[in-house]
Image 1 (cartoon, rainbow, N blue to C red):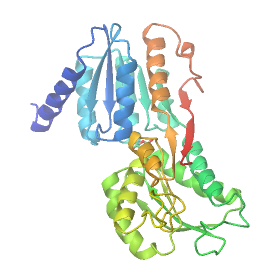
Image 2 (image 1 turned 90 degrees about the horizontal axis):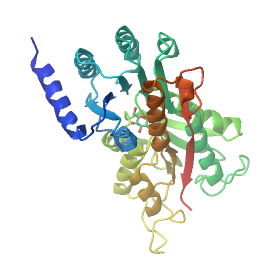
Image 3 (image 1 turned 120 degrees about the vertical axis):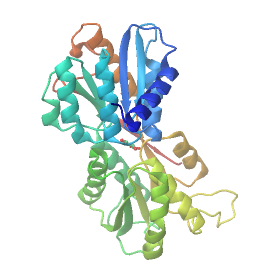
Length: 342
Ligand code: BGC
């Protein structure tokens, strides 16, 4: 018997199907999103939908609303009427183990994206792949932006070292704890600063689960405790950076204190905040002078790699025939790009 929740999931799936059924293609491709409300994932999904040739492919999108239970039900449902290939953004990356076994039993190839399964799980089967960006690069680029802003010389920091103690005081706003990107980006920010001789004092790190509202809320306490000595905010993504900026503005930061008609780095209460993703709103915030910089998480290339790989697999060619480099027969990586205000 189908429970209320199951019915809800199917109704939702039906709704999303309605959204994508303008395709006439024969090849059915299931796209499973961990959470369609996540702006980065939503943008990536839109990219995929725009890149799939609808005369060949029929993409069907399922939104798990951030629940692995819902995603499992959606997968069970799709296995009753199997698609030709599944593109999966798992809610819990450890959940990939069970997912791979299910698709392997039905011989349906799987491409994971954005939330990286463990290597040993991907090794369970030849026909499962991962498309993503190298999180190390993102953390390194954020650190480089800040080293540059502070004058590129660890022994002689410039005026952005507000208290002149030769140490950069900052905080890190982190994404979900179990997500590879939060762990690696955070680690690389700190390692890159120290590898280059910069002293960094981490005043605190807060977890805001990629979410703007959570970052906004958590900034209250951070600013009460450290607002006076804070010199930089590293955020694991743009959404949380934007939440932090909203709070900073309410607390009196980012005013046009020198009266030159705009908010910029010359204003006394300006503080560098750096994000990751390159969301349109973040790019606008860079233009407005609040966000110092972001690192573009190239969703166009990731979507392109997924679409190309799908094409190679479903046309009976070898996955290696896809135009993108396939590392270890499994992984396609895209590069990040820094973007800072002038
Ligand atoms: C993005 C975040 C996003 C997360 C979702 C990360 O790669 O940078 O913005 O929320 O993926 O899994």
